[in-house]
Length: 169
Image (cartoon, rainbow, N blue to C red; front, side, top):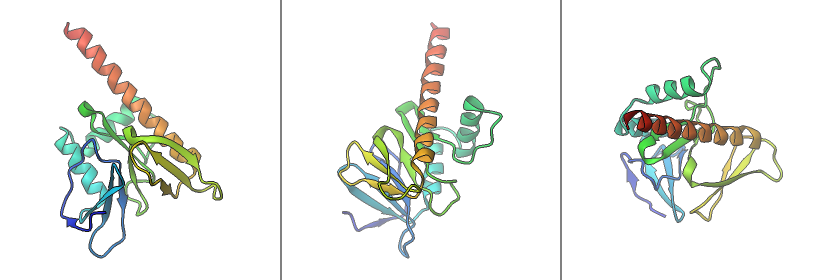
């Protein structure tokens, strides 16, 4: 485990999850493959917003586009975010992004989500490239719904890119 604290963090394909931390020295714990952790001074939503800008659009723009694409008539507060859609990096929040318990989970690292065995208000996320599971204070049905929404977002982007390619050829 890395004990250094970094001022910022750049989201990459190795970003597994971004967790809110309540520590004097840092606000965020970033999970990476092989059970690596990175401690960061910035808050999780700040990292997501910076990643969106690095990926070519604002967080609010990405959020509004996903709502428009998937369900424009419904009010959402836990919208999946295409951080770097051109690289297949999509994240979904476990809670409202402003909530102190909000974690950001990166879709392509999720192996499966299972209900907590003793608490219906919790879930367990198993990752493809981490031994340690992530315990989340969200019901299985709610977290799985977030996972499925993200899948719809990804498929929608893939289809739009195919449609654009066909129009250009």
